[in-house]
Length: 120
Ligand SMILES: [Mg+2]
Image (spheres, protein in one colour):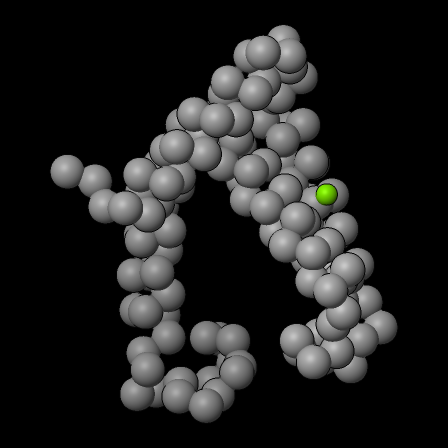
């Protein structure tokens, strides 16, 4: 039995597969192209925060909030497609990485300290 987050990622994967198939775009969706598209979308997301003081919600207007929402979705959709093409179970990989991060950054050791693991 899979958890709800994993199910929602699978549903998004299936939607992207269908979207691409209906347009015959799978031929363009190589891992390299998807990795590049993901990076471009991440930059489009960052652009919404460029030159703001912190990017906190109080600094955003509705148009910018919508733009951020859409770019977050673009990043997620390319991430899901890249994981699909790479044979990666994204939910399992995220859980695995969280466990690795927890081991690398023990809470009692790093609480309130933003330094990288090899700097303390
Ligand atoms: Mg975009």
